[in-house]
Length: 353
Image (cartoon, rainbow, N blue to C red; front, top):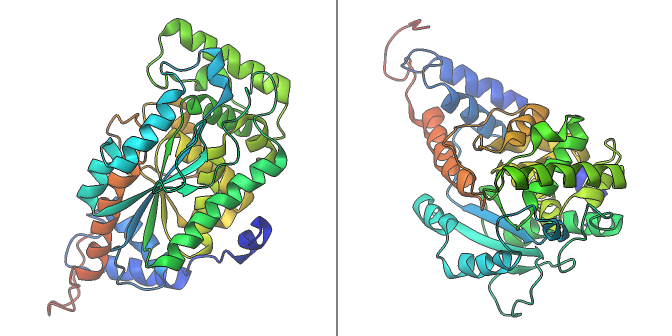
């Protein structure tokens, strides 16, 4: 299905169920609002599912991987080879995301969107490679417009394929790609119009001199490419990444399938930004897991109008924060469905506000 068709197929969440959920929460045998964010997100999940008793049994963590030509400019502490090495680590179950996903009873699926490496055809990943990494954004566009659209459509197709294979109740997004904090910062810089020097963070842990260089690289990329902030596909094509396009497609695909989707850190949220610029209704299906230490991340949340669920000082990516959030969201569904109301336990009207 083409991108335009998928975007048009996205339906608003059920506002009547949202109202019913909040009514039940207010009447539960506890002070109204006393479980805070758990109540807020439980009502949103109910409106997505169209029912009050929501079960998030089948959890999928989708990690999009891609390489970036801009690493040639010294913006990362690690070499590009780490991208494909980490993909193999994900497949073998030895990475941070694998450990947290096992704890959350979630399945990890890796998508090669544009890694500069030839993976074996029988490797247990989604083979969606557009090209072997983007071009250097400090010298020109990261990719063509058609490649940008293809990257989004590839992300959508992963959601469609997973849903066709079996039950999916919720999706968490993650990323892998050396150099991708630079591309992600460029995206929010364009969309927000903010000073890149105030947005740029240390990524993998670069020092002061490398950070100064990263800021100059970002400024040069914007100046050379002049992305159109009113056209999210142009922004993705000019300064984005293949995995960021894939992440955008996953958000759009999840919304089209009526599934909640949790975005992880800076890179996953950059994908969510692109998705919600293209398909604004998708925001109704979107949750933000955490506030990362990357400076630009908080401005992404502000731009999206999303409140992150927690702040644990995370800065890894991979979907680690989003996977932790799966457990919080799962707990919230039980708050809504299982806590008895005053009427259900035989107590008359009681106001515990």
